[in-house]
Image 1 (cartoon, one colour):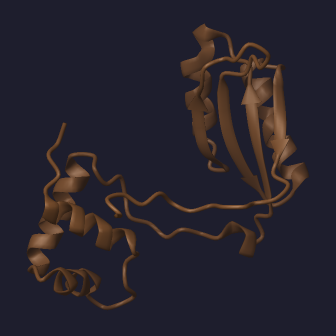
Image 2 (cartoon, rainbow, N blue to C red; image 1 turned 90 degrees about the vertical axis):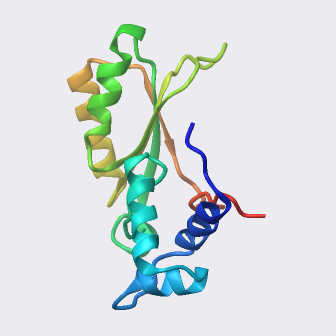
Image 3 (tube, rainbow, N blue to C red; image 1 turned 135 degrees about the vertical axis):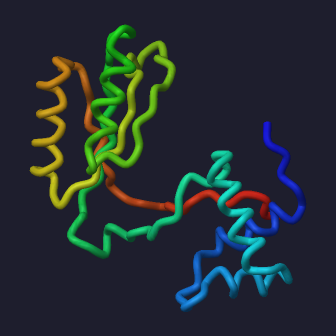
Length: 158
């Protein structure tokens, strides 16, 4: 396990607030932390190298765009096909999450994924394509009815 110092935690907290739209955003963050910009960038590179930070990117509020449909699909995948099926599904750009989960007594589904599309028809077409490619016919589509909360998790917040 990688040791995360108190300063590292402060850096992570600042980064979680978002990157300011400035010509030198890391200087703004460094100034907020009373550290040098070069040091901040060095620490961020270390975080990336060590897997603490995966990436930086814009977060799209897809409901405010043309992507209105969300469907969670649960698949009943034979154990020996789990890895290959999970990897195949994960390659779809429209899939944001893909997880193996334990099977429950009355719910035999072990692979869960979240699909985003412009409309239900587009999503169903992708689901049918995945089903055809994997030869997995036992799946359920759990359509999003209402979004009550959707945020990125924040760490080291008190």
